[in-house]
Image (cartoon, rainbow, N blue to C red; front, side, top):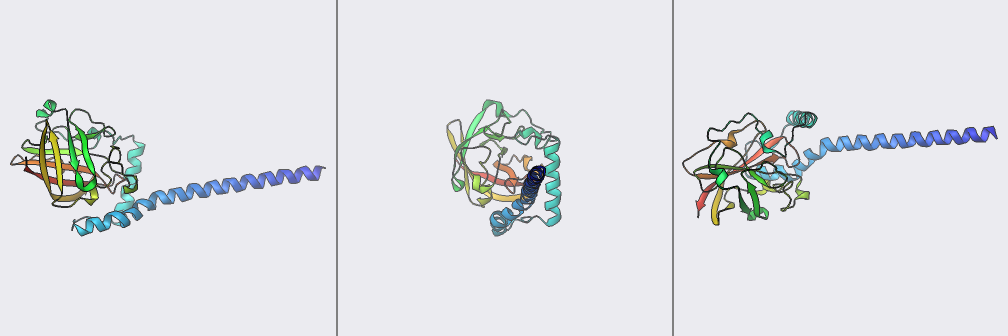
Length: 240
């Protein structure tokens, strides 16, 4: 009888060790997938799109990938909340921070090329999970200057035009010549894309103001689903 119970305890120990091994394998595979999936998705979706547009910095090199993953992990650890636009460029100090944004708390934009219709843009609230955000201190559409609109992106497979956490997932598909329409106080303004660039996450040049015309700039993370770089899409007022 004693031998029988010994065997039973041994089987239970082996079963527990097997479960622990399976759990460790799942964790290891998950970690590897976390590192490799953004790289694979870049190769499948974003590299061909950006290469076809002759963007000068379309493909992250291996050292950039590693450094970006470390940076992304650091941001997660230090609690940086990228759903709030004020955390994107904390050192940005606009010269004209009190422009007429307060007179237009909300307006909408439509981008037919990527199936975005009348997406709400806020000039008074910085929560990117609720709407797009017209960055503080920048112009609004129809004014001379540069209206800079921030929005979230994620993997293209998860795109939902009505979900502001995924709304710019397909922004990488936009090209020079595509249209962005802004609806401000009942008036429709047409903007034509003329420049698309990729910059470092610390580069705030997209916020610069140029008052010789009315400009509208879209800013989101790229590749979608990461915080590696910033995709900057510039457009110019075409007609009313």
